[in-house]
Structure formats: C-alpha cells, structure tokens
Image (cartoon, rainbow, N blue to C red; front, top):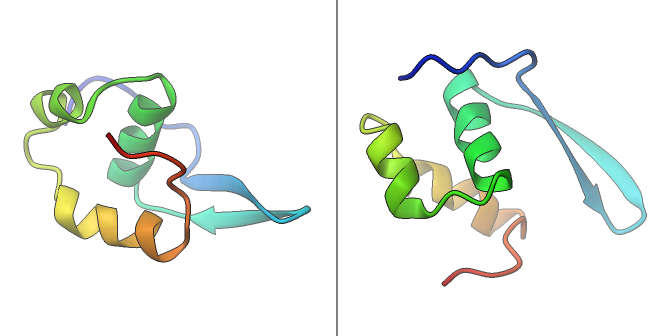
Length: 70
C-alpha cells in the first residue's frame, strides 16, 4: 500500500463502559489510522487504491463504530 508501518494489528474500542480488543488486518489498521488522523475518505482511497472500502465499511456499520458519516 504505502510506506507506513503498523506496530500492531489490534484495535481497541469502547463498548459501553468496557474496552473491546479487535484483531484486524494490517490494511484495516492502516486505514483506521488514517481515519483517526482525520483523513477524508477521498484522501484515503487515493492513498490506498487497492483497499476494499465496501468490505471494510460493513464491519464498522455492523459494530456501531461510526458516530458520524458525511
């Protein structure tokens, strides 16, 4: 994809008052890192042209990870 390196393929999220640990692919982690840095979807798709956005999007929607989508 690009020259970024992922140190861990685990995502920590909060569900209610409990932390949840999720194991993810390196590509998903790179994408989520970009999201957390405030990159737009357009910029992320430019940076990661082979990323399967439609497949990735189903997981955050199913798990209520997204709070806003513009």
